[in-house]
Length: 132
Image (cartoon, rainbow, N blue to C red; front, side, top):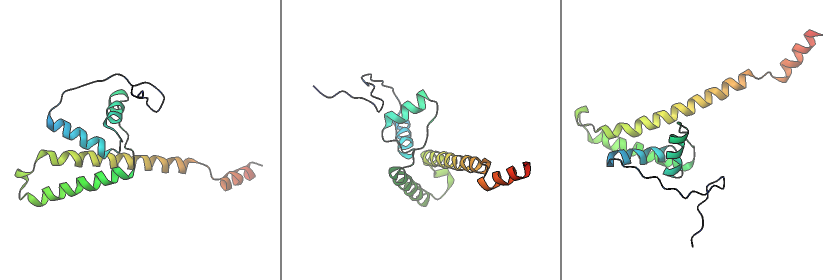
């Protein structure tokens, strides 16, 4: 008998869910979960369905996926002479990578704002002196 398939929280995952999609939809889904840095497609789908939010997970594989996709896009752009020949599938990874980079920028901006809100110890002491 095989070992039970438990998730990180110790829950038994014995249920299977299947869905139908076109080959282009599957290719887009495969690109998106790899670009987001998820280790499995299952984790990506569960996050997006159950939490209505997908969080990019920065890791070395994500960088490798970015580099691979950017090389494919560059090759496609070098091949194409006019915008009329440009395939719609080229824009899928571009849109995904843009969303990821914007999310990273938003997170960095939020952290910077949070840092700036903190009162520095020296300023706290100065304020306390003036109050008496």
